[in-house]
Length: 234
Image 1 (cartoon, rainbow, N blue to C red):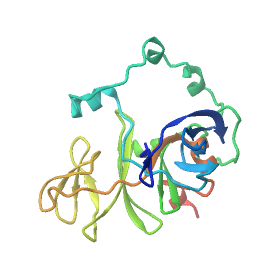
Image 2: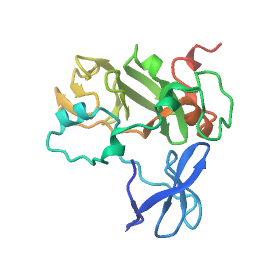
Image 3: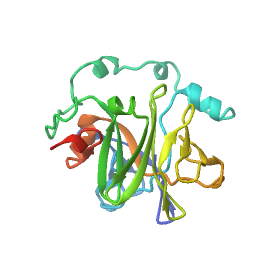
Image 4: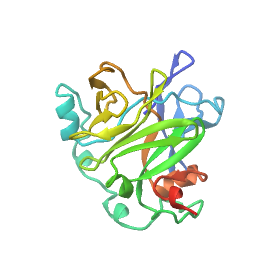
């Protein structure tokens, strides 16, 4: 999810019908510039090189979202919105419309990953690893990061572990609750809000992340690390 505001001006976007390495390409109606959906960056046109502002969000179930936000509004797309025409594609070994750009067998081509990007550094956190390790204290480049995963909903988010200049280390506490080892503060694992303890009221800073098939993530980030695999390499 991105902000539609660029240098104080509001833009509107549509689907161009183009793909870059199997990833949707948007266009803005004001300049006709083309934008990569996954990169959040203008790739061709007047605004080439401009990056959209990342807005924190997460993918989850309607049940979970409604429980957290009972007064929320939802877009219902009617009959066709109730059906998924890509069911057979998910179960196949096809890699999008145009196939892979780079070959990388560190993961199965359609392994789901949480792809995290920060200051030019990228790393993939495979669902298969996160199922067993739903709270990950890691470092991406120079930044201490926290990745939290909910296997029941497939939700995954990434945060900086730095709060008020101190690097915190987190443990799972209950159902997607967290507690940091340094102060004993309790946190909401998905929102990053400190609920009880010395840091109550503090907010973890979200880091840009997205859900993706492995082949889609590594084709746009060919130098990406893979958590749980690269650490074991000789």
